[in-house]
Length: 434
Length: 200
Ligand code: FES
Image 1 (cartoon, chains in turn blue, purple):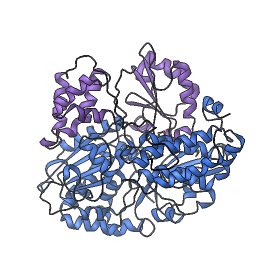
Image 2 (cartoon, rainbow over the protein chains, first blue to last red):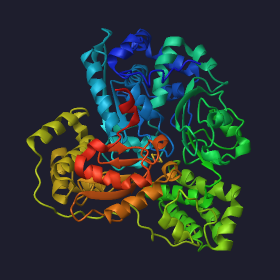
Image 3 (spheres, rainbow over the protein chains, first blue to last red):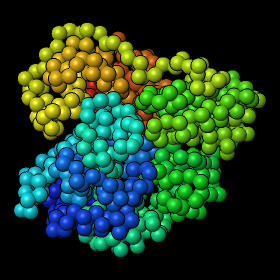
Image 4 (cartoon, rainbow over the protein chains, first blue to last red):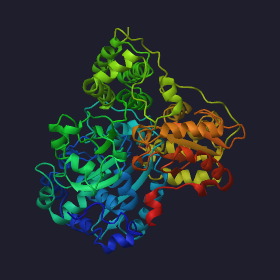
């Protein structure tokens, strides 16, 4: 398949406005502006495009829910907070194809009747922000952003808004709170952003990759888009491979591609490094259930991964080989969740720290058998009891590793040490484990 | 009563607990920074100046190196909100420093993909070379060391952020060269983002 989102990632100056225009850039916008907003929404609905941020919610529906009759302004918030561990695809799109992001934002604004889109970018993407700002200025100077675009009377602005280090800001209502100048903490839903989002106005929050799929849908039509992948999983998808694979990186493929192909095929991950055997795969960012090596012959689609009991999530595929201690891996992730919990809901704020303490105890060889049950009990008391999905995300690494690798936990307790201290781990920490 | 019968409530330190920053020296924005801030404020509806609070804090930090309570007062004045609101935000986001940091702030990503590729050893080596633990600053004020969470560059693990730049695929054995390089040549020794370098 020809690459649709990332064909010119490696082309010198492939990110510039000139280059983008030579490839027919902004023609989808011209076409969309000749259509009514409703027709654009219908087209996106017909394509079956599902959100690429993690939840896989149909984008056309999200746009349709935006309260058009409201007298208030409408907003598009482009979610460029990309903070899910193992995920680095939006980074590539923004840095190497920024005008596709802008074109997607502009078409989105036309579709929901917005005059402003904010791109909320995580604070650590400073160099990416510089690229975005420079290219935005060029697009503005060329009349592609601003007043009366293409002489159609359509006014639209795009602004980049820099975050400041908060995983939680990737949750759509927390992103809105952060954009309003507050702590990035989620809101109680409903009301959903489509009714009362940014500044209490109807808002659509869309992931970068999601918006990048919109211009090709306008150009080539919804049937073309849907036919690119399996049923209900149409379009191109970006996959992020990291961990113990030979060729880590971002790869574009239709969702027919299987998990095994992504990890082993020479076009993608190229197999496991150093001749080791594969042990476990986290297929969708840090917060989804683990897949075992015999579960990989599934399409890497939303529905395919779900059928194997996990989630495609953000398509951040973290690969772990046989040298990886699963108690250590869970502890590593729970440190993340403890650190990044926004603190609003008690189960997540307190529970994340408890889980991390328990895991640390077991990993250091100071745990007891009953701690393993306690882990499960605490995790199950977080699950489903928080405002946003963060609580579930924090509980999952614990539940999935205890379920699949319980004997490893027990060995830690029995032997009073980490039973798999890999050489790539820190000396001091490995020593502490003995 | 805790929500789990076997666990104690409220024992863990969480970032939502507020700690007051030092008063610090007197602070006033430079005219250039004030102008930049006004420009940023104009991106939001006039009654929503608070949206520019992170930007205002970044400017204060750029000017002073860290964010003091006096700086927070200046931010509140510029944004037209209360100091408590500013403090609320500063204490939540990890990228604002409330005490002085070194000229080079090394931020080793410690999250899973980087850890699988030896990030713990990178931190260990940097600790040895610098003689400080994570969270500390060298006595000469040149280096601070932090462990941070996933930077969104996991294919180039382990990644070290150095101020606003990235340094990719850092190996433990390169710690000394990195520190020496920063000391003598500054940010020029950093790899930067590979996407940027490969293709511009
Ligand atoms: S885990 Fe280190 S950059 Fe993602």
